[in-house]
Image 1 (cartoon, helix red, strand yellow):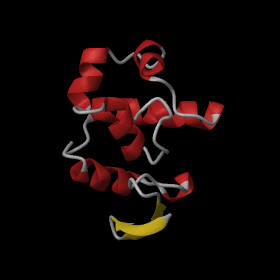
Image 2: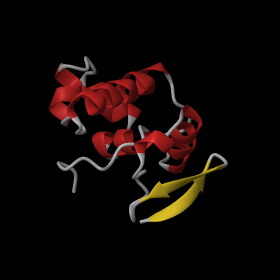
Image 3: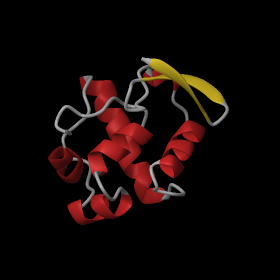
Image 4: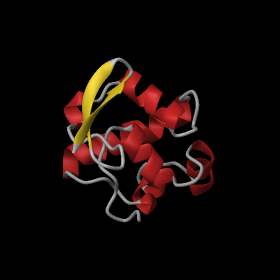
Length: 105
């Protein structure tokens, strides 16, 4: 584990850049990670996914599956891939300040 400065704040990250202490996350960090990941500015659809991931993580202690995000989160698969191209669950989890989902390689 190491540390990295994101949005002017030093945070703990693992070797892949995922926050290891979720409590260090804030919306400014999310916005900075989104830019790093090539997403750009976070819009309403992005925040819907991020907020759902955080709610599920808080309630269950794990990052939900892609299927759960689409079914329970109400975000169509097509939209999820449009919001977070190149790995929607992996990128959205990183931006949400959560660990890499176990289902992602």
